[in-house]
Image 1 (cartoon, rainbow, N blue to C red):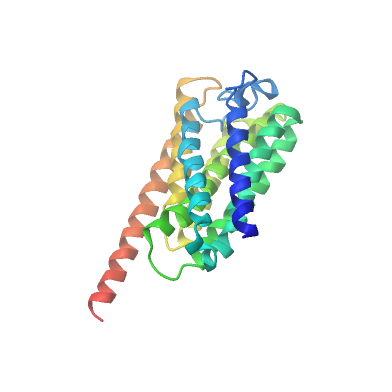
Image 2: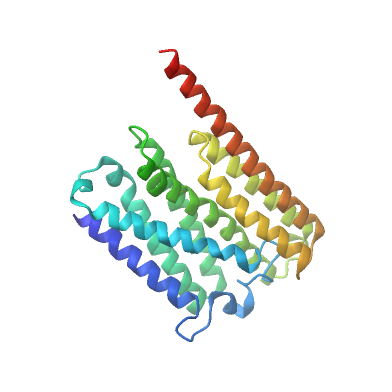
Amino acid sequence: MLRQVAVAIAVAGALIGGFIGSGALGGRSVDETQGGALGPAGSLLAPASPAFLIWTPLYAGLVAYAVWQLLPSQRRSPRHRAVGWWLAAIAVLEGLWILAAQLLPLWTTVVVMALLVFVAYRAHRAAFASRTGRSLRGGILLDGLAGAHLGWATVAGAANAGAWIAGLHLGGWAGDGAGVLALVLLGAAGIVVSARTAWSVAAPLAMAWGAVWIGVARLTAEPASAPVGVVAFAMAALLAAVSVAMRVVLLRGERARRAHG
């Protein structure tokens, strides 16, 4: 019962934090904090504003999970025991990141985001390690939710770190070459994560979403960078194509094995 209540409270806190971070209460939105460093022009890895629409399904997923795991029938579920605390930690860290962006130095947001990526990865791994069969609801609210948070947090974390590095004025460390290298590493990480979780698609597709909007931002707005923009689009296409194709191959193989006994 403690875990169920903790998850519900953590998700409620994340929703409140997201509401505050949007500037809906009259304060500054996140992209206006830190001198604009966390906005679309904060670094070469910053995505265009529409990328942040992903928060709507991410928060909706957290709410749906919080409600589902509160049901009496779910109280003793081994999957919730394995994943629930990690999802609660994701919600808490997302709220803390907004507070750090609003109130603390920029480097603290990088630290919080790094913790968020780590926790989301653990949640994603726990979700797949605890699977005992196929369930559409579990696939969406456990595997998919954890993976989507991981994919988006990874892209957002790169943008966050890029904004911090840009503020240090380290020359080439914030230039086109560094941006391209970062995107290549992100793409490789997305493929590895997908491969290690039965070619799951949530994490790489969330990363691809972020990469598309990085590409849009770099080719249509400042700071402009054709190399970063082109590589971002290429990375998005690669992540989506490889993860989806390999998932289809895996599922077809499983069906064939079942058909032959």
